[in-house]
Image (cartoon, rainbow, N blue to C red; front, top):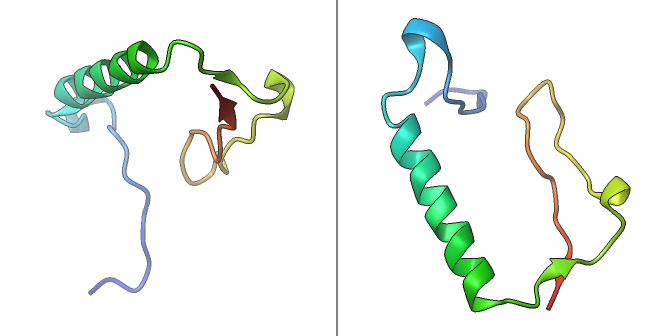
Length: 68
């Protein structure tokens, strides 16, 4: 087993993940379903207060406070 964990990513160029398109389509469908199921969902803080993950490891949200 590897002693260190490396972040997963889609890659780019000749090394791009072949499942990237499917993964993005599944995320889009999931978020559309969530937003349809919870029509009153909204951000529970100022957009400037949203915390992002460390960009040297991955790029994404560290947390997303919502209310509905």
